[in-house]
Image (tube, rainbow, N blue to C red):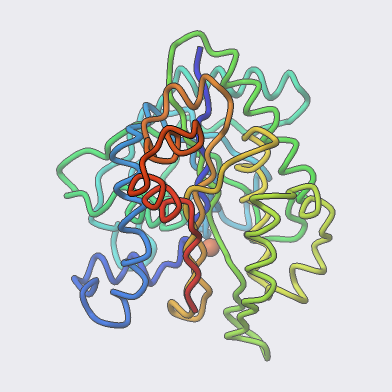
Amino acid sequence: MARIIAGIGSSHVPAIGAAIDNGKTEEPYWKRVFSGFVKSQEWMRETKPDVAIIVYNDHASAFSVEMIPTFALGCAAEFPPADEGWGPRPVPVVQGHPALASHIAQSVILDEFDLTICNKMEVDHGMTVPMNLLFGNVDKNAHWPCPVVPLAVNVVMYPPPTGHRCFMLGRAIKKAVESYPEDLKVVIFGTGGLSHQISGPRAGLINSKWDKAFLDNLSKDPQKLVKIPHVDYMREAGAEGIEMVMWLIMRGALDDKVDEVYRFYTVPASNTAVGHIILANRSRTARRRAPAHKAGKRAAAGKAKAPARRAAARAKATIIRG
Ligand SMILES: [Fe+2]
């Protein structure tokens, strides 16, 4: 049986992709951002997921004002990087998982979530930047470490889906994955945000207090977040802050109780707050199959020696910057 073992929230700031592609990751401005993902990449290498479901939004690359699906699931065998105006990013073609994606489509649609099925789709920075942040820089002629099931969400044109709808779709995805017969270790990404506004009189808006509360509730009390109306995202997190509803799909696909493995927050990157969180399911199967943070498990069982307990405390500690 397949199982979602963890959820990852990550901003997908396009300038981060440009910094990678133009060799600027060691410059002080960008090093501050990339240093926050070093532990996450270690966690990902240790976890070795079989598949990643990545919830992201298209930025008028695969879709346009002519066609705006609210939820679009990628069922293709591969997803080439889109040309976003200066050529496709020099990253590998994203390999899909058509069998799992088709299973999710069937299960979720029969659960009354009317997804658009995409058998051909290019993907933009909304997906490839979080992949870089979590998987590292991968040569465009190599392969990403695991196949991906993309789920594109409309947060560009009004009306985007509500936070509650997103959370419930996450629930349906969880059910779908758990009814897939193959033994797969799955992680799910929610991407976008955090607070930012890229145009208008409030361009450059960043609300760190709001962002921190969002991350806290995502970890401990997501039901508070599902009630937030669109207008509050607009007021508090800026016009583009609505991207944060995509994190609720990720959270809905996890167990009610999760362990916060890691958190990182910094401002600014471009004109955006960068947020990142890793939440791990506590369920027995997930714990048995997830190799990360062995020190934490030993500490929880009361078997750890003092240095291991300190290591576990460090691993659990949240890192907030900015
Ligand atoms: Fe975006």
